[in-house]
Amino acid sequence: MQTEVVITLDTKIVQQAQQYAKIHGKSFSQLIADYLAILPIEEGQEREQQLPPITRSLRGILRHAELDEQTYHRYLEEKYL
Image (cartoon, rainbow, N blue to C red; front, top):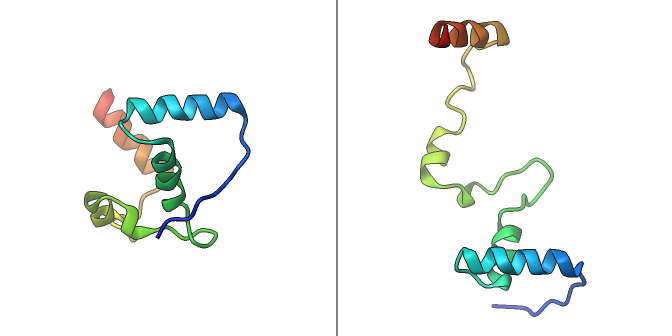
């Protein structure tokens, strides 16, 4: 089901968005719909179904890893120096 919505936006923003949509082969309406579809339902909540499968599979992979800033810096030094 689709609903028509009327909004007021700055002309320059609309023109930029229309140009972006055209470059990416989408309509202005589809561009707005795609953006609104990825907004969280509630504060801090992600719409997991909107994530690409590869991203979904990586979520939380480092949740229990004991990584700190010092370990990260040591890794970078070993890698690049």
